[in-house]
Length: 297
Image (tube, rainbow, N blue to C red; front, side):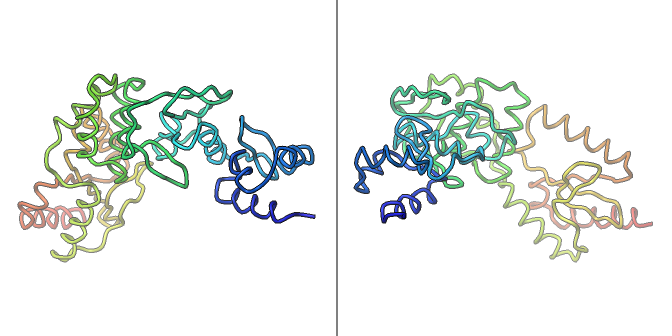
């Protein structure tokens, strides 16, 4: 028969991706023998030193990542490649999970990084897991990535609004000597004071309404590519270009490669920059209307 302790353990585990720590069990009033009994009867499963799964061993990678963080102490955070996945930049979960802690842990199955300079602002909670901030994740991963994957990662973080250029600049300002700082500084040095991705999209919607355009499909797919806006009847794609996320040679080339492939599929692409959209909206609207009329036959 389950005790009040078991109900409390289950409640705690539901909030922690299926895990509890030995310290938490002791705080609930369980002694060494009570913990050992639950291990012997299958109510608890030892996963890491001082970390137990409740009822069964979690199998989902995100749950196992939480357990890895829990195993490295209360100040630990998911980091590096594992953080890239949690923030949605990577689609895969590599093992071992990577965790950053303030002192040197040794945990089988976990790659632990020691960082004495990790400030509170360098950690976030995302999907219920403590993780390095997007800026700190980019800094940690910059030495590992080639130019194209690094450019893609920064652009995806910016486009998702998880990262802002000013946050990256603030981190680099106190990260002299970090091996990733030099790789990230061009993203800050070259940044202009353009709009964020979400601001540009909101401005474009207001632009469409102001000048009476038919409602296009937004963030849809054409020929295997995600496009910002599609006037399907006219077979015209509109791409919104902000300098912060379209400034590299790699992105410049990939955008034009995509334009050529969608043109083969029968869709013309019009690129509208944030500067033109805000400084010359009347001229931009007149040009877009002409393009749509011509395309519509």
